Length: 135
Image (cartoon, rainbow, N blue to C red; front, side, top):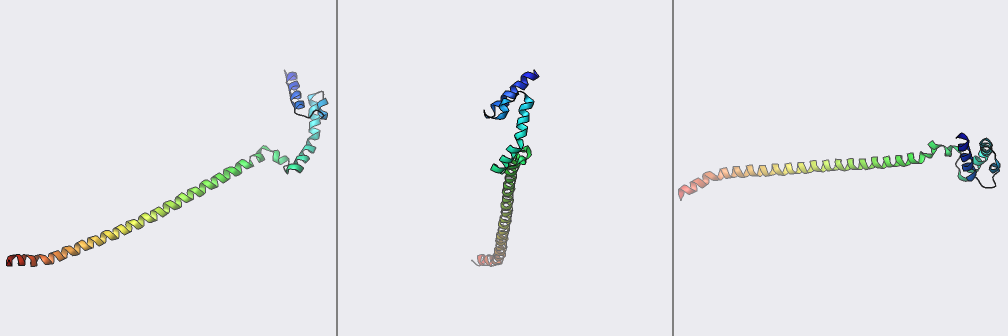
């Protein structure tokens, strides 16, 4: 079974290489891997030169940096939105308190006016009673 898997692996690797690649002539998996390992520094240097991405750029952890940055941006956006909601809630509380104070002042004014009218009415009652007796 191991020999069959090794043969499949060799075929897979050779299929991914150009037809003129020297590793195409490798007779064993060890020989094929030896060719590829020998070329690794040249491939890394070429990758660094053309893309600015070194071996570290091929590291799975560094490949996740974009995801981490995107998540960081989403978190910052959510925090900004949450702060916006808090600010609007605080403004609504201030406005509600202002309306409440305004309503309380209005109610106090109406109560004071009703008390004044009641007092005036009390002053006029004796006069009204005297007028009614004189009629």
